[in-house]
Amino acid sequence: MSKEFDVVVIGAGPGGYIAAIRAAQLGKSVACIEKWKNPAGALKLGGTCLNVGCIPSKALLASSEEFENASHHLADHGISVENVKVDIAKMLARKEGIVEKMTKGIEFLFRKNKITWLKGHGKFTGKTDAGVQIEVSGEGETEVVTAKNVIIATGSKARHLPNVPVDNKIVADNEGALSFTEVPEKLAVIGAGVIGLELGSVWRRLGSEVTVLEALPEFLGAADQALAKEAAKQFKKQGLDIHVGVKVGEVKASDNSVSIAYTDKDGNAKTLDADRLIVSIGRVPNTDNLGLEAIGLKANERGFIDVDDHCATSVPNVYAIGDVVRGPMLAHKAEDEGVLVAEIIDGQKPHIDYNCVPWVIYTEPEIAWVGKTEQQLKAEGREVKTGQFPFMANGRALGINKADGFVKMIADAKTDELLGVHIISANASDLIAEAVVAMEFKAASEDIGRICHPHPSLSEVMREAALAVDKRALNM
Image (cartoon, rainbow, N blue to C red; front, side, top):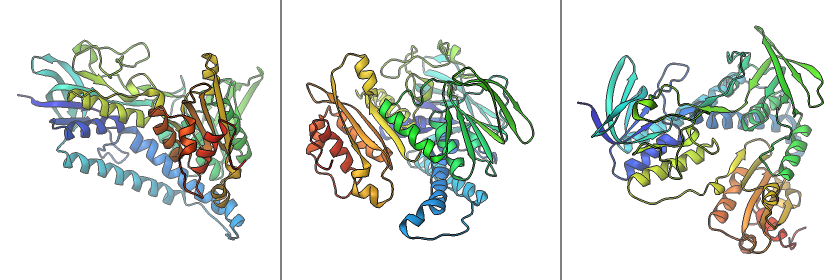
């Protein structure tokens, strides 16, 4: 007889493991299926984000920023440092140590919450009166479990270029780009999205000559135009060579180099030669080989699983969250959906306002926003008012030598309700949280402008931008 659980989660990335923990907190018997193995062959929880995504990339971003500060910026503070060198092996070991600590932490949380980790690949085999049946194959063994409720949280994988093999040595996706054993002299990046900009920044700081090729005609087209313009200026100043409107042609890789043929925005045929290539052209959902058809479910033409506002599929008691469903492929969005579904299964009535899901790019300066851009709102015919305040007028930003960027707030012209907040600055990923709370509770720019912010702090720029919406910033 197969084991029975109230909830079975397929996938232990940010969405999956959080869903499992919340369901267990609510008194459900929970199992989580995960097959991820690290390069050493050890099974690990945490999915792409923790193992080869969000966490290791932020570790390398921090290490590379420390190197750049020591090499170029400590002198501004009156500190002289000579012969600064990079130890890539030690840098990578630090990154892996952080990943190991985090994965062990999830294992502890599973034990604490009495969650069963089913190690292997989960595949639907059918339905019975008792629930949905799932076959778990791994480590030479196969078992079938029955779930009253299922949460599909299988995440996504890097999209690759057609006919361009990724060996993660010369041609790399996000996984390989986190593990280069030496600094490439010349690095090419295809795709100027979050991953391309972050990983391009890492290796640029460490000494690579970085060229980024982007197919879209506008840089950071999803961001507010003011934000994108400032970001382009900062990246150019740093040495990132970004080309938009590019059409990539043939990519030829050898044992130690790669050549990319492309057409620039003016239609000129060009060739880019590099030592390494990072392909960061988006991600595709992991919905293959799940046996969806066995329970009457199928992915749509783009590989996603269609769900309603409560992440429910067309099959009763089967839910899907995170990168396999509509919406942005963001770890925190997946986490929120995991909590949402666990609480729905428990009979509660939670909700998610997707307009209040923040976006962050962890470059230097960081880029973050929540809500709509000014161009989106104007296209909708919405009357708005805006306020913008620069960090160059903030004492704390000057003190830490990070005064680039600004905060831009957009509010309804009549009601003053905040409709969008856009930040480019140091620690923008932390500052945006105030805007998320404000927008979740339908705050007005006046509300933020009336709140006492600590002085001196970067957060004061949030208040000043809010005051600037009504043209009454105090320090400008």
